Amino acid sequence: MKILFLNGPNLNLLGTRQPEVYGPTTLPMIEASVRQRAAVLGVEVEFLQSNFEGQLVTWIQEARGQFDAIALNAAAYTHTSIALRDAISAVELPVIELHLSNIHARESFRHTSVIAPVCRGQISGFGVGSYILALEAAVIVKQLA
Ligand code: DQA
Image (cartoon, rainbow, N blue to C red):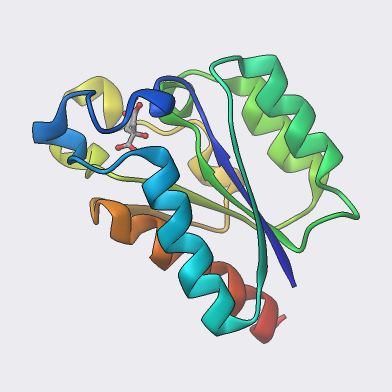
C-alpha cells in the first residue's frame, strides 16, 4: 500500500510559523514521525510540499495508478481552491483532508473547506497527531474497501 502525503502553502515554515497555533515541530520532523508509523503498518509513504496551487493539482492528478490514497493538508487552499477540489474529484482516490489546527475553532473564514465534500473525511486539530491519524485513516479506508 502506498500513501501520498501532500502539503500546501507555508507548511515548509512549520517550526517557526506561529508555533502557538501549529506547534514547534518542523515538516521534516512530521515526515519522520509518519515514516516511523508507516514502517510499523507496513505502508510506503511519499511526502511532498509546495506553495503553488498548480503543483498540488498536478501531484493529485499524477497520484492515479501510483498511490492507494492521499493524505492532504491543503493549508490555506483548503478554503479557496476549486482547482484542488476538481482534481480530487477527478482522481478517484480516497483523499483524507487533514489539518494540524482545529479549523472550526479558528477564524470564520477557516470554517469552510471547499475540498471537504469531495474528501473521504476530515481530521483537524490534533497537531502532529493529525498526520498519524490521516495515515491510519487511509489504511482503514483501503482495508475496508
Ligand atoms: C492548516 C489550517 C489552514 O487554515 C491554514 O491556512 C494552514 C494550516 C492546518 O494544518 O491547521 O496553513 O491547514
